[in-house]
Image 1 (cartoon, one colour):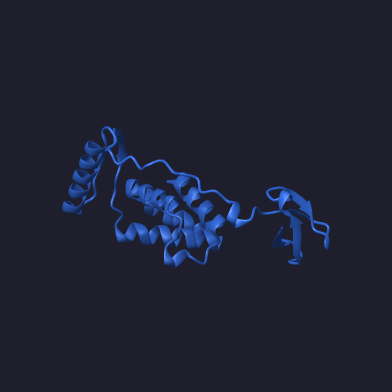
Image 2: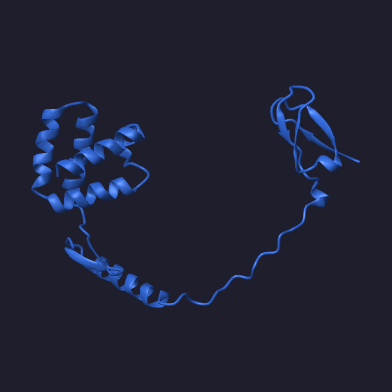
Length: 168
């Protein structure tokens, strides 16, 4: 009995001997190298190990710390200064709308090559340096730009954010 499959290059039907299954061969029509698949009835299921649902050592404590931090952040709407998370100090700053708007305007000015406008916006952002740096870093980590900047090509957007961060 033979193995039947379609060439991945020219899509022609190919028949190969069952012994050739799992290896490579040449398509008789287009001469391209093709993989000869193993018939489905010969495939074996690989048994999976059982899922270990025991808690990871220290995981419960980490979960509690994370919940406590989230609760504190939700209670306090004012910017938070130095905070300890997972043993590492980090700065968590809630960006105000004006900082977010200034960052968007700065990226738009960079996109338009309006360097004088960029200088003015960076000067305003420096007055709120911690908030501005935090907001730009958050934008850099987010894969999707804000809706106002989605027309900016991703590589340029990323470069503009790095430029802003270096100037803050």
